[in-house]
Amino acid sequence: MYENLKHRLDKRISFQRQAVQGVSEIGVVKVLTHNVRYQISWPFSELASIRASVMYRNDRYVQQSIDPLSLEAPNYNDHMAGGKLEYIYDSSMPRGLNLWTGWKMKVFAEYYQQPTEDGDMQVVGMDLRHSQKVHRDLLWINRLSGASSFGSRKLIHFLGGVDNWLFAKYDESIPIDFSQNYFYQSMSVPMRGFYYNARNGTSFALFNSELRVPIVRYLVNRPVRSDLFNHLQVAAFADIGTAWTGSDPYSQDNTFNRIVIRRNPLTITLNSQREPIVASYGFGLRSRILGYFVRADWAWGVDDGVVLPRVFHLSLNLDI
Picture (cartoon, rainbow, N blue to C red):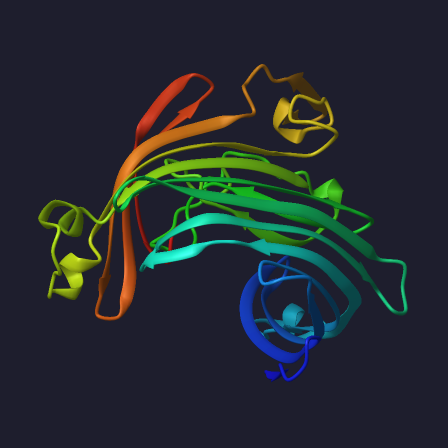
């Protein structure tokens, strides 16, 4: 990455390369992704700025040869070009590791197009966060986030779990509407108390509320030498959110609201009476261990009015 911060107009050029393996209809496929992005940023003040970027992305799909059928499968490339516009506001003040007060906000819109074909994708979204001091280092943090995707290609949002979840689990009981032509995916987190894919769709909305306190520093009220105990934090939280296809979570276009039973030669479609919005509550511990910020959360999900068994999340990431 290269940055030019000499003048008020900031400029940045970045290049990213990623290689992942997945499963296709005829075997294992390796995806090589190359992404080039040019971004400019204009600050209105010390707190607010607008950012614009253009990008080009190439995905090369290489079919791994494991049998004669996969050996004959051709490799192919997918190209996407587009741009992103963001408005950023940040009045936060740091109060320690994973601790801050003030406001953070981001509103964005994205547009992507295949240069030589008709595939296109648009994404709009927002992320609003506020942290309020309650008493000394005891903080109350709230976050409201959401996004929607449109176009012939769509972005699927998987609701559930936490970011950088170690030993993550996936809920395979929730169906995916493949008629939406999903091409990319995004994890809508944190939605603790659930596995990944508790809900999915082209849109999501999520609200998180959390009380957080560095418990040792708060109780002893003097400098703590141990890095582990100095950054040891206790959190109590509640999450509520949903992901859906269609105009709203209760729409008949939302795949979650339909149950399809296939019994050859019959296909039966039932309207579901389940609640598409899920919630959770729980508590957690955080600290820095060997240079990594480690989070441990114990959460109970509430799905369709039923409290689910406790789910443990161990992750490496800062909080909201």
